[in-house]
Length: 446
Image (cartoon, rainbow, N blue to C red; front, side):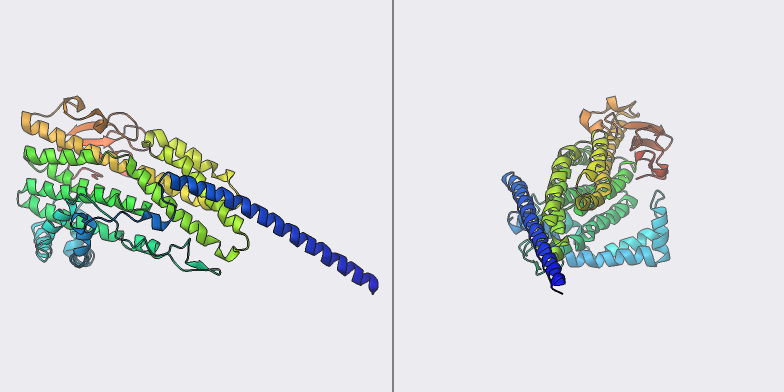
């Protein structure tokens, strides 16, 4: 019996020594990863880059200068229109047929009458949205003063959802509503032969997209890209509808030039990094006794973005292979970090494509504006890009680094990018072989 006690005692001592060693290793590794994390965060803060939700808060702007405040005041009307918009398109035979024709065929007189009736419920909205778009500043209206999940909301192993993240996700669709309202206005104006006024509504939407660029997070960056695409769709129809004044053409060209902003994607990714850091902190609140797992993931996340940001600011034809290679190397991280950061990689690659697709679309639009202006002024079509008075950079396809392509058809110009496959498929938009703008009714018109 005494021998058994001695064995049990030795086992207990051995187990205690093992636990003590594990605690020492855990403490040492936690200290090491904590020190690494603080160094990474200090470097970001010294560069003036955000690391927490609170640091995303914009500087105060006088309300009369803040486009976001103006749009917030219009929220009840925009919400009411959004409901009527959905009800018409999804729940009425006239609206469903309009959606089917909207890729190229002009709307019927009955559809225009129904749209005009809905728009008449909001007579002051066009001017109010225009005034909002003309504000010089825009400050996100999300309340960043609430504690984010990384700080005070995770206590004793319990973490509630971040109100900042909830607000980011819940407000995204609202930013598309003004563009939808303005697009319907443009369609009605075109049927009334008011081409200049229709073009001006597209300008308002483009200005709103530039404001939306100041919202944080990738989801908002993609919303801004979508708003640009919707505006380009409307303006493509306007430019092909008939003569336009030189004044509104110049306004369009100047507005499109303002969208040549390569720092846009950097803002999106730096603010997305904050979201990823917050999410990483919240993942391991139940494993509070192994802090090095959380800290290691945070360090690896920061390192991943440090390698990504210089590459993703380059156009697609220069960056996509580097980004793909970087994402393939995520496996060099720990099993935990590699698996979790690996979830981001396909989204990152898709985002780079979306931003350059928007750039290509707006450059195609700018070229189309110049082409139709040339024909209107000279009585004949241009022979090619060299006839157009545009900066060389505005003619470049971000997917190839070479000039965008032109194709003349009986219905007008097709202006397009070779898109991701890098091959000129003769303006074939089917299955996104190429990407761009074509005449009304042209297959795949964007």
